[in-house]
Length: 491
Image (cartoon, rainbow, N blue to C red; front, side, top):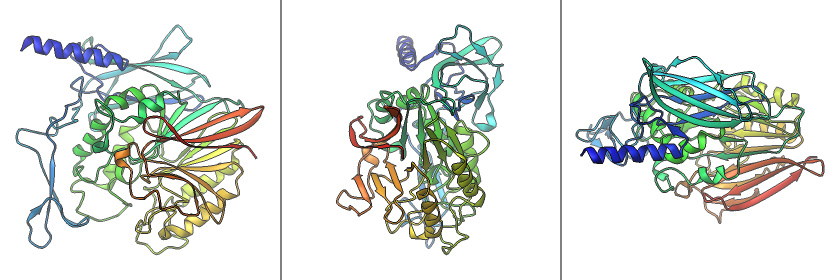
């Protein structure tokens, strides 16, 4: 038994060393959910971490079951028709708890500090030790300022239980943005639809992450549906479990310690499918819409608000928008008062786009604005339910030179050009082939320039050719094969 335990510890040490982690034999605390680096500008960045009780996630095993009370008989049923307004009951397998089910990574108290430096520098900048917050799932976010533009930084997150005892450390790196007056080659990748049951990588996780790493992206955009609360996240603790089981997967840990990420939330990582503020249902049990909003802010590196814009050199500016916090009910009659974005965000978007002098301007949206989408969907700008605001946004974007839309949400890849305005939209497709669906390859509409019901990701490259700014959009398969490519020179 002792020999078996020693061999297991050696195995953990070797695995974590491969992920840039160390000191896992110290007794903890650990950082089994890795680090995330985000909100990077030419001067600032946020580094996120979380302390954990164990150096690795709970492996394959027990999972909770959710039953629903039949509205007519009161009988508990597993598969009610549709999405009923019924109270869920969560049942854990015998001898299992929230801390021992598959993918569980219980949090732990302790302190963290960050060491960071430019890759070419000799000396490290060192922050003070900070307590992780047990009320925020034992997380902490380091906000860095006064960074140098267009530079690669190394980071090292250290942990301790206090009293001089060292815990696990994680090494990472990220790139800062170039100054707004400098033309540099920028590469970024985009993904959506990351469902835990649809993993496709050996050992756990998703093939897209090592495929994207090979492209050495300047940054990554996750357009939402990062986790899926609907079926199992009926409590606050189960919602947090969704994040820890997802971000303790080997591919995810390895990717996010090396690449700047910008996160957008959508319905499934806010609360439930097609949700909006004030929606009433018993379906999500004790988990509320407001709790979902708060969990997102604790689980990703994030600044003051979830809609924001970032400049990456002379030739690129991106906008990341919020599609859940300010929206009208899907069921509200369409008209000038019905909105997905809300008045304040929409005014901010138009103003900042018009103020921008970036060569290429790209809107990263959690949901489609052009589509086309299925007629039974009701929650995005390509649906008839939000026609008024959709027309308004498409008309505005069509008047901007060199502006494109990149969107998530849909479980297939496409390039569409709006027949009325000429606005071009790129859907990145879901994170795995298993998650692809909801459309078919023979459902080609006049708007479609490219269509494939497949998993993968989108790459966007902004560069200069013979002094002329260019932007290239490439769709990739989950294995990193190019499926479609469009290249444009600035007008």
